[in-house]
Length: 311
Image (cartoon, rainbow, N blue to C red; front, side):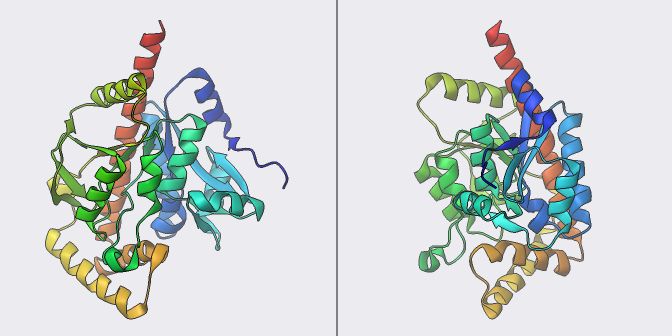
């Protein structure tokens, strides 16, 4: 391959050209975040959720070295079913393209590619962050630094509870990433409704998020990302006692098996799936579908605002 331009799915290209709402979606959840065969079914359901709320889904990934914004169903199936799909952060994109890799984009990579493509809203499950014991290992997700310099709105259920949530919030503050709760002043913990930390700001509607984005663009001062933390309702979260017990066991297994770096998250998610007998998977799917719906409604509100401003 000698042409390394970003490719666009037909539906996404037309939507971007026409100024219609588009929502970026990651592909790591397809290749690494969910077990087969549920991963492909859920990936399709996520895209349909975005469509049902009035926006166009743009799942981002790499196929044979080609970076694609808006994977078609065959490409999505490939990333969901073949072995050897590489987990790609921003730093990996050029190397993976030059070597012809199949790759799934992380939150960091998806955010960067979406922003480059002119897509302003991205739905994911949980954000990466500062790992436990990071004071000794310096293990911190590239998601945080990328969001500090990328004007993207990320709808998520906070950060994964397997991380150091407090340290992650401190890093987000230091890096200048804005965080707002959606109808809450408490930061969610992925599987859990409340991770135990207050938030300074809350928004109540997709239209209010769209107003925040408009203010950011018109001010032209803050160029970093916006996190919209969308918690699960209390009655839909993973049982907190089961969560805490499973997490403690999983952390012990991490140490026993010497798992580090980017292998930590898929390892712990697999442990949660096994130890909770699938309950965590059900919650995980519920999270991403709720976030996809909210992200789509934000994209619709932002597009409507832009259209009104242009009249």
